[in-house]
Length: 292
Image (cartoon, rainbow, N blue to C red; front, side, top):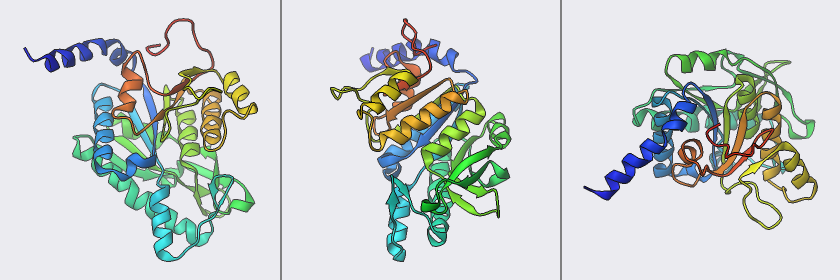
């Protein structure tokens, strides 16, 4: 008998406790980084999401699209500036952001999931007032901070067997302005409002690293704050860990920061003992936590 078939059967058998554990669970996935620009990686991600839905989970996808936004801004001759890692967004820029995120990127992900046999529907934070924002910082222009969430539309979609794919564009409280929302921030706010079982932040690094440069597989909020104060957590990892801590405070069971470039990263995290990346939750039990 082919050894590959035996290995596949064994893997499926070993995954059973995890499949049972996550039946009915809401898992919010922030999808972004290099994987979005590669057709094969996009197809692999879509296949994993369809599998998650097939075994009874409720995946919710929130995506970014920074490189695609940069490309169109460049073609239109619109300069893009960043302050503390966030894009300064004026009226012209926010129109481009909405076109790219709600149009090009969102529908590409929806199509990829549908091509793998799933049922996906693309929406943005503006639909049904899913995400209502205030200005995050006057210096940043139309960059929003979610202050009101209406996630019933998401619940309605996954209750109908549909995978929601959400663009991080939102409505303003004052004059119905359009706001650009950081993808991690949007994913954290949505996960918190849904009281999600897991928030998976897919990125281009392997996870949170300690002083020696090794990935820390499990952390508490206290450990995250300690590493941040020491300057070990720095740069682009700071907004991700801040999102993780805010999501935990809102009732998300656990947050994982993991490398989206790794094939089947979401499945490795959810359905194996080893997991993937750095799992952050309020307490780290003495026994191995992945199935819990």
